[in-house]
Image 1 (tube, rainbow, N blue to C red):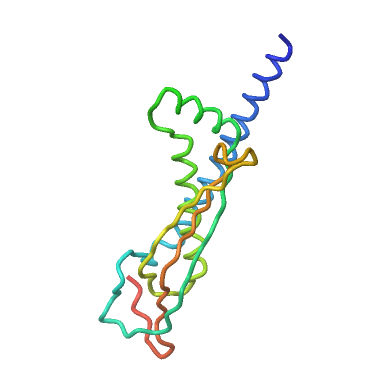
Image 2: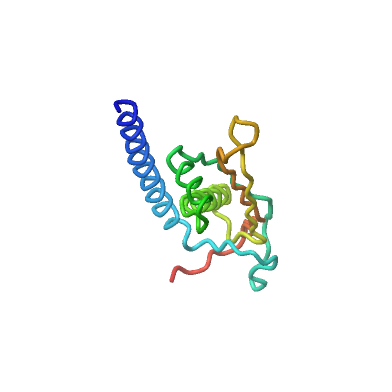
Length: 156
């Protein structure tokens, strides 16, 4: 009986700690996304043709986010009964948004980022490929900076 109580207590503790960490990460992402609202990051390959092209280079951002044991446990139950695995959805959302933020940080000062792509990959746990251990998101695109002699556009 004590073993069951310890197991349940650890499960609840893991859920609470994981939820707090995830909420903090989402708040951090939202705060940092506000800084890049004026920097377009688009999937198409052509930018603003009215502006003279400046320096262009590849920019990228990468992140690996781990799954906590409670989410893995819930996902296992969901896979038995079927349906959406929302615990993995939030994991992928956090990883994708963080990778895009890191790419934008690398492109600081760029007028725009063109041809943005996001790739994801799973990294499995230690048990011979059974169960998701973590997920990697990799965002990349072409950063376009204005020419050095260009006059900056007026502020709105």
